[in-house]
Amino acid sequence: MSYKAFTAKAGALCAAAILIGVSPALAHTIVGNRVFPATLTIDDPGVNDELALPSFGYMAASNYDGTPGPISYTLGWEYAKTITADLGVSVGSAGYTWQKNPAAGGWANIETQMKFVFYQNPEHEFIIAGALNAEWGGTGSPQNSSLPSDPHTTVTPKVYIGKGFGDMGVDWARPFAVTGEIDYSIPTHPIDATIVPDPVSGLDTHALTQNPTVLTYGFTVQYSLLYANSFVYEVPDLFKRLIPAFEGIFSSPISNIGPSVAGNWTHTTTGVVGPSLYYIGNYFEIGVMAQIPINQASGRHVGVLAVVDFFLDDILPDSLGKPLFGPPQAHSAALH
Image 1 (cartoon, rainbow, N blue to C red):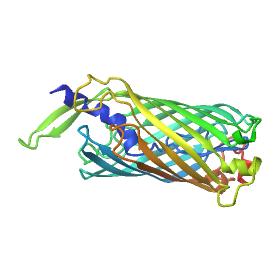
Image 2: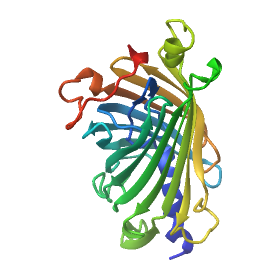
Image 3: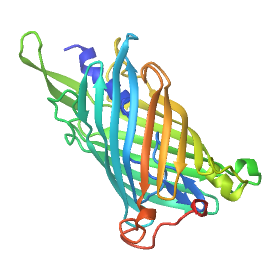
Image 4: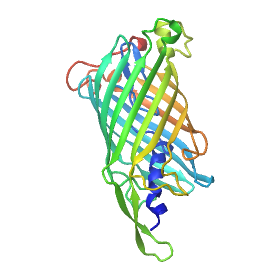
């Protein structure tokens, strides 16, 4: 078997996380009077009781030779539950993917996550958190399906940070906020052996694919008209619950990649950037983002991400929406 066949999946895996949609970890966070929305490229830095249903992704890929690649549509979901005010768990999936060129379809694996807020300062709208995520191999579509899920489990430690600038001395800066996330994804099986039918002989052959460790990192820059209307200046009713943002996410293969060969993007960093807009209601959030690929490996043209996120801590504050132990979550004066 050639090196190209052995390493082809490594580059594809790095691009797939971006090209077919977002991970299911979505929530909004409140630190002092700052509302960090459930952004679409990265997770926000807090824990909450929420239901993201659905999350939607669209992206058109490009083949290595520049010809049009697969076109993918995804529908996902995620449920997040607080254990305490600083500890939360979630379960979800990137969901089902419909693919064209070639036609295919399949379910993504189930993901679980535990997140802990290490530090937050309400006065300075500052928060740091960490999480451990597991994508459970084989919980999606089987290997004989047209779009199989990964047969191996991937474990990902994560670090989050958020900072609002409401403590700044100049009014123009106070509605701004930034968030960031860094992930390190470690597959439990560095090499997978899969059975591939030979279309000529009709016999099954074995193919080996490397599963690289991947560093993923992202950011958002937000300008909260919700915050501005409550604490800085009056905003017209049509805009006062909006948070426009600019965000991006990038993935780089780190190890277990194999040699660089012509015909694939094994060693290529992939990513998307783009503007986004979030509407924050009392009980839900709606977000949409334009995905602009940073290179040919990341996509052929602009894609779309979107989510509807229900705030269970506001919808059911005395039952399903409160932590299992300890006091309820803090609320922002900007929302009321």
